[in-house]
Length: 250
Image (cartoon, rainbow, N blue to C red; front, side, top):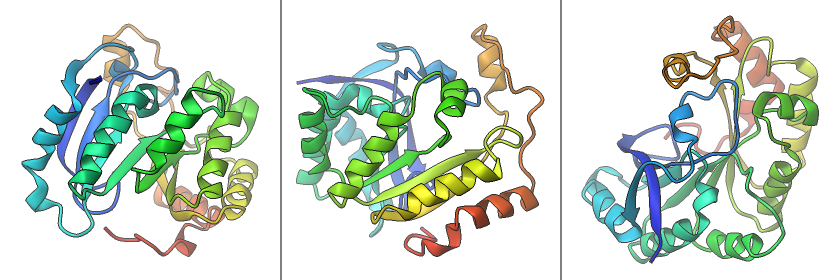
């Protein structure tokens, strides 16, 4: 029985998948996104330890609030770093008939073993993935996150190969992730897929700055601004957000 390293829980999540959801935020991430609002979730092996059954028991106390569309979402940190736990946990969830979602940046994805076989099995117990495209340009992505994006895009392609529903998310940072060229390339990539049910643009905010400073990290986006309505609308049009009609409202 594997244990999870957990950063925190949210009992009534409304933005991390369809419906009302119980969110498990796992601890540990190897990406270093400049706008990350939870740098305290980076440390691998930190947080509190729980078994899959302990987390399920905690979640089931709130099941009456989930309705027809809700369920459980595992987020992070980066949940795929704890894939053994995820597999065990989602098997238990599916025995209970619970809708399962993974919110991931997909950076751990590889078609090499043993990860690939575990991931393929995990998909048998996963109803939906929410995957970030932080930046489509390889060099910009490396600068923004300190990791490459080739395997992230390959993960998205693999979900298309197996017909697994996904939501695509993009954080809009004015002057950093809002270039017309990159958004057009992102749109072309998304339109090449057949499994995208929803595209979301999330506005950058600096709410996590104090966490960076309290941890002794230099926050490089002090001068970045939250996008205004016009900037959000422009990006939404470039990514043709309105054309993805499923789950437009939870």
